[in-house]
Amino acid sequence: MGSPWIAAGLAWLCPGAGHFYLRRWGRGVFFLVVIFAAIYVGWRIQGGLPQGGAAPLERLATLGAMGMGLPYFILRFGLEYAGDLTRPAFEYGGAFLLGAGLMNLLLVLDAWDIATGRKP
Image 1 (tube, rainbow, N blue to C red):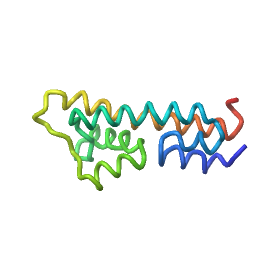
Image 2 (image 1 turned 30 degrees about the horizontal axis):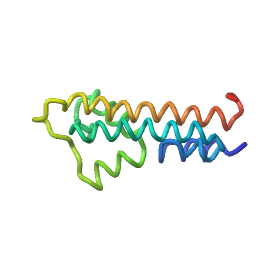
Image 3 (image 1 turned 135 degrees about the vertical axis):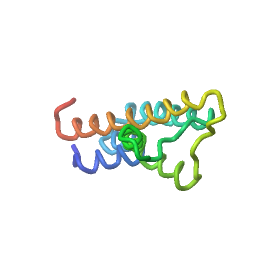
């Protein structure tokens, strides 16, 4: 069907791209919309974007948020986004952003399974 490495790499880089590569158009569009909706909501309510730190859980949260792929790096380095700690929904927005990264990591595994034939 396609290379699992390319499918997984594309799925990580841009949500839904790995499924587009595997010609799973419906899944690709659905996942693209869901992940970008979560990113948009987290960004609009000024949620906290994990950016490393000394504590182990902060580092783990950063790795999880990096799971959203290119959008994470655009937010963090391109837009220099960190969120607004004074906003009442700061924690909720951070949960949306972290959730988007974790969901996309699951989609990377889904694209890998489809490419290797483990999943129809």
